[in-house]
Length: 344
Image (cartoon, rainbow, N blue to C red; front, side, top):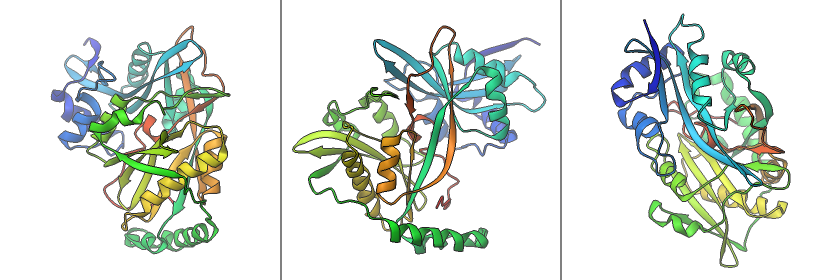
């Protein structure tokens, strides 16, 4: 029976969910969630974002993408991060075939983490090491860490001890000269030009008003975007995602190489997260020293490092310097199980 690769459609939803479930990926099943991830139009990316490999008419493998781009000097490349990658059991090579086809449409593929099986496969598909994204966690309300402990009570006390230690050690600097304003989807023009740029040994993935408009419409984890101002000028931003009892710094940036300015950015994000009395912890990723240093200075604890790998297209180069990635660059910004999943 012939095989072919095509963009998926909403009619494939049930088959895609079944493939992901067979792979143990805990798929979203709500039609609105699937629509937002795979099929809802995006003004910053008009192309398809979900693909299936079919045998006859039946999907036997699936992969979706989080589209992006980076620039280095005068060169700009489209970049895809593959998510929800799975194949029907027993279909050896089906997932790899689909991944290679998707990769041919981009300047590079990015992989951030993955299952043990995925990490074993990626080097054979041409992926190469490009650093790591370290998870940083700061506890805001240690007692909230006991919420839901009935499922795993042996984890609650060590988590609480770590949380208290983090609170005691935290000495987040104040940022009195900085101001924060929440930005709605209708007011994205207020962001101005305070968006990530590559330079000084770092490659940053691009951001745009259209990209933020898509993320602010996320139905899985509500998102809030804030502009960071100093002396009346927008200097940066942070995007917060709300999961059960947890706030995630899904993305952030300040147009400065000064550690004090990055500390102020993180301090402002912590202050906004603390306003929600149901939140136990705030978390974020850092893959570059400047960002990591700001987390540490603001009382965050490093929990785990996730490998970042890149597969450049033939004739393309690896990103120069350190690749800066955030939770926004894959699905880490919104994935949750609908209950408390503390990372402290």
